[in-house]
Length: 153
Image (cartoon, rainbow, N blue to C red; front, side, top):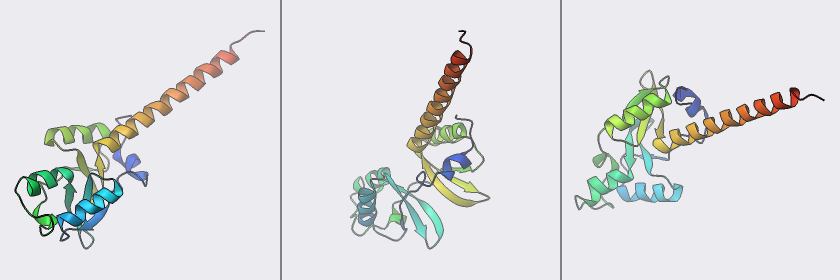
């Protein structure tokens, strides 16, 4: 349900597990990591500190379009504007609205200023679809049970 907290989404280990790379690594290194992990973004880190999210869109707009050399351009020099940040207790719906307002496909989830993870629009859509399917399956089981218990005979 879209009114669930992002806390539940982040509780799943495979969700929001974006590959991480040093912010000083090259764009070529980031693209190689994104390719090997089948990811559309990598988390740029400076030691244990979140620096930003480097996306495929950043490669196009800040490297290719500017004719910069990906082998020598550092990620930190090609990051786009800050990824929108949302609190861990925000709802899925609130996160999606924030993504729309900022025209971004990712949102950074934090708790008291500490980054806990990064969620994509796809992560949230998959979560909502699975949650709705579970609710539907539960409702069908309840109707079937009521049907069996109401039979006479």
